[in-house]
Structure formats: structure tokens, C-alpha cells
Length: 444
Image (tube, rainbow, N blue to C red; front, side, top):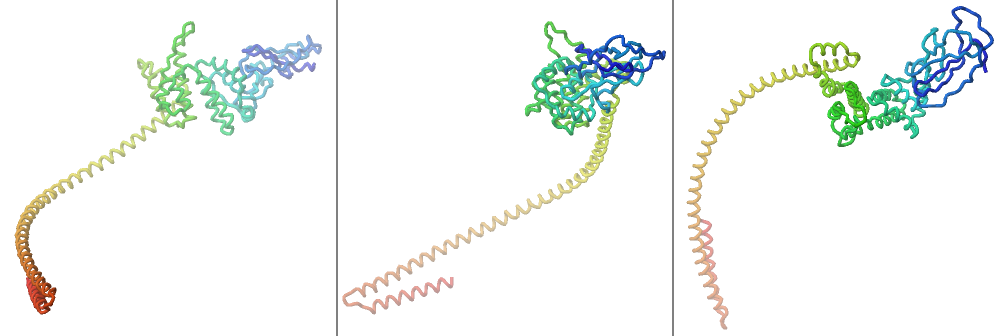
């Protein structure tokens, strides 16, 4: 036990759990009266107790800070606990240090080494911006898992956040953990689980959109559903105040928009238009008079967000104006080309009418020539048929005569005493007749 009279320990009482822990012995600043310190202690120092790990230890809310002398009872100036909050860029430790200024407020530093402690710290900040220095970031990434016991301890914090002030901050800081995909995935899983059990996200369409299911509604429809959330009144349960309900709707809509940006590829350029339709425009329509509009315009706190939205709308307006001017130029060119086409169309119509008239005249003349040719061909065909009939009759007669002569000659040859001369005579007669007929055919 250290009995150094120049050092003291600080008793720190946690506001939520009531647990008491003591800092390490710290130097005591000299008293203003420069009185000598009594070397004999008025009481024995209490032993330093190391606090058991508890979920609420990560909270920075401190009910009170009591100084206890280590080896002296002489009054001295209070040694303040100075330490940066998590995310200030400085090292986050679990020990308290003396404040730089005498009499300053003392706050304990919080040691964040696990994901559970970090989430509890986030709920302790009640929706304020979160950050984590590289040292603690690596420590938390090494314990980026939540077992059932940890989830049970965190459930009370999730239920206490009835206005959904924390999930969006956890989702935003998860984007900074690009080098630790496991930590980022664990935070996203916890945030999704915490939000899905909230009544504002109980609608089946909203849950489908949050889970990115195939039958999920479009993003504007899901945002509009959350922005129009109305709690169901339950007997024995106090209903939300109008201001709290408005805050819940705003927090839920902002969270869902952030979720879409992180998991559905919604970029910052399209986000202002969505928020304008589902959140900003309905709120603006509720402003009844010019004074309310003036108050709303002059009481905006998030200047950066308003600037981003206005800059995006101004850019869209500029792009729309440029597109309109381009469309007007193209419309003028199209009108001029349309006028040229109309002139060409009139000219083509005149040429078409002339062509149709020429075609009609050609058709009439063609029909007349065709009728004449058909009549001539019919007459020629009739004459040819007549000549063919005559030729057929003559050939038939000639062949019949030749056949008769040859049969007579054959009969003469078949006698017991063949008469060859008769056959020769008949054959010569048939041959002469056929030869004469062939000559007639060739002359015709």
C-alpha cells in the first residue's frame, strides 16, 4: 500500500449501475494556502478494487466523483480526471488521469476493447456522433463477435432506444471500418436485428426492403411507409408525444436511407430527392404562415446537410436548364428540318401524282395492246387448230392407205406360193406416198 502523502485516489461512481471504482494514486496539487501537509494520515486508505466487467462500464455518465486521500487528510485542490472521449484521436485507456486545470470536472476514460463495449458506448451517447481511434479499432476488430449473453445484455439498451437515435450512428461508423470487414459485418448484423424488432419497421414491405428481398418495394415506397408510421395504441402503455413521434419518424427514415446507401448502392446525389419527397416536403407543407417558414429557415442546425441538398438541387436545376436549352436547340433544328421535309413531301406528292397519272395511261394502253394481242393470238390459234386438224386427217388417210397396201403385200407373201413382186410393188407404193407426204410437211 502506498502511503505517499502527495498522492490521492479518486472514487468514481457509475450513474447507471452505482458501482464504485478507484483510480490509481495521482499527484496532489499544492494547496492555495501553502500550508504544510500533515504527515500523519487521518485514516487508512481503502484498498483499490478493480471493477468487474459490466456492460454499463462503457457509459460516460458519471453520477459523482469523490476524492479520497491516500495518506493525508489535509484539504487540497480536487484532482480532475481528464481524458479524451472515444473518437477524439487520442488514446482511449481504462485509467483516469489528473485534469490539467485545478478544480475542473473529472470524467473517467472508458476502455473499449470489445464490440459489446463499443455498442454500449454508442447507446450511452444517445445518438451523438461516434468515432474510434486506431488502437481501439484494432482491439474491437479482434473481438468482433457477440455471443448470446452479450446480445441479452445489449437487448435492454436496444429496447430503451425507442426513438431509434443510435442505429444510424452505428451504421455510419461501420463505413469507416473498411479495413475490418468482420467488424463491419458484425455491426451491420446487430443494427439490422435491432431495427427489425422496432414497431416502426414491423411492416412486411419495410422488412422486405431492409432485407433486400426479391419482392421488396421500391426504395421511395419503403421510405414513405416509415415516414408515415403511426404507433398502435396499447392499453396501459403511454403513447408517444407528437414531438417524439416526429423524431421517431425522422430517425427511422434517416436510418433506412442510410441503410440503402450502405447496402443498396443509393448514392448521395439521389438521396436528397428521396428525402424531399418523403420527409422534407410533407414537413414544409405543415408550415402555416410566413413566420413559421422564416423560423424554420433560420433555425436549421445541420448547415452542411442543408448545403449538400441545396447544392445537389442547384446542380440538378442547372443540369435541367442545360438540358432544356439543348432540347430547345434540338427542337428548333427539328422544326427547320420538319419544314424542309414538308417541302420535300409536297414535291414528292406532286411527283407521285404525275407518276400515278402516267401509270394509269400506261395501264390503259397496255390493256388495249393486250386485248389486241389476245385477239390476234386467238385467231392464230384457231387457224393453227384448223390446219392441225386437216394435217391430222390427211396423215391418218395416208397411213391408212399405206397400212392397207402393206397388208395386201403381206398376204401375198403368206401364200403357199409367195408372190414377192406383189409385196415389192405395194412397198414401193407406200414408200412413194410417205416420201411425198414428208415433202409436203416440210414445204408447209
